[in-house]
Length: 276
Image (cartoon, rainbow, N blue to C red; front, side, top):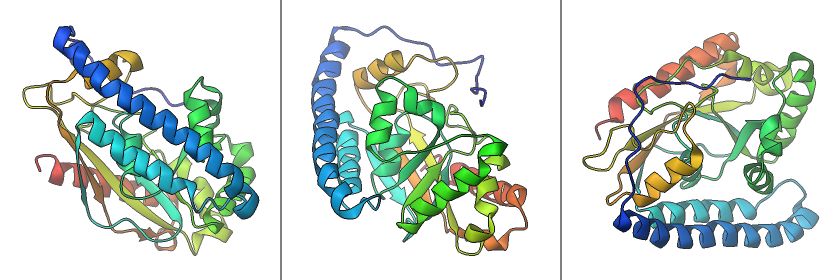
């Protein structure tokens, strides 16, 4: 299991005043209604979609995308995108900063997250992940054949599968080395000649006057505390998602070369757009 990134200089947890609690209620109630209401609609539609289309999921990702767009509006976080998302199926890799990445990365293009198998058993989160089509994989060498089979099946339906190759989240001011082991399944002969991979950089801009790492969620930070702090903010900041040109897997000699090239591109995007 990947070790969580940590820092000795985490942002201080500030007390939430009366006005902050009012803002929490004004944002949390509509956000909860949106997320769980949208999930309810998705599950109903999925019943018919599964019968008619099987694993293809041509309809339900549109519901997830709209929920994520509206979630950012309710939170008051401005959204900006640069570049063009890839067409068709393939893999997408991005840096990982926060739980907010789910909304930011789904807002413009329909994607499916790839997560370690343990997430499927997490209370609440695992259920939501399964409902929205997350692909769960076991990160073990003896599971490589099964991983390739799962990837081939999903890619055959035109799905875009999103990975976080850092293996953990950070404060948003750096990109950690990409773990090349995550790309091993890509180099199966059945995938290598056809698979395209798009690197994506996610950059957060903190609310004016707040710690620059305000939206970062990492290490042993409590999810509930971070959520309340985000909801309580008097002013919100923004998020920029940069879509870099896709690369062809066949252009790289091995998984290490691919991981390094993608890491370099994502890090360059962070350096170029951080102040935008």
